[in-house]
Image (cartoon, rainbow, N blue to C red):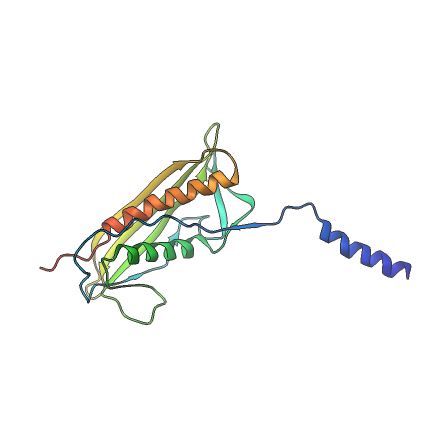
Amino acid sequence: ALMALTVLTACFSGLNSKIPAQQRYVLRPTLAAPTAAAPAPPDATVQVLRPSGAPGLAGEGVAVLRPGARLDYYSNARWAADAPAALQTLVIDSLRNAGRFATVEADTGPFAAQYVLSLELEHFEAEYGADGPPTVQVALVCSLGRRSERSVIVSFTARSAVRAQADRMQAVMAAFEQATTEALSQVAANIVPPAAP
């Protein structure tokens, strides 16, 4: 009986751990209001590929770049999905909201699209300088191409940097949301179906 009580005590002591529970974060950027433009051509369909991630940015950890080019992650903080998957979803939402394409799908969609948007996640981290709160860096390389010809129509980098108001997780997440919003606005403004010849 004494041995059983000892085992039970050991089991329940794990429930009182002082290690903080991991927090999962999602980004809810503010999408720009659609511009009053002509309706999208019925054949203007685009497939958004899952972004490739720069080293250290492809997982669920919230990346931190410290002085000396040291890549780290916030402890007990994770994205709700890995960063490339989250950015792919946000780009799709942004392009759908812009209304310039008749259909915007992920690369797992069942339909063939006329255009393909390739993405590369260059930066998605909180960068610390010598002192003060970090600056959130977001950079997404975008290349729109025509599927049939495998030719690039436009290629550019959507880039934003926002300094957090404080060195606290809530302020850092607000900076991530603002920087992502600005980058998505650039994507929506530049990714448009080419004019008919």
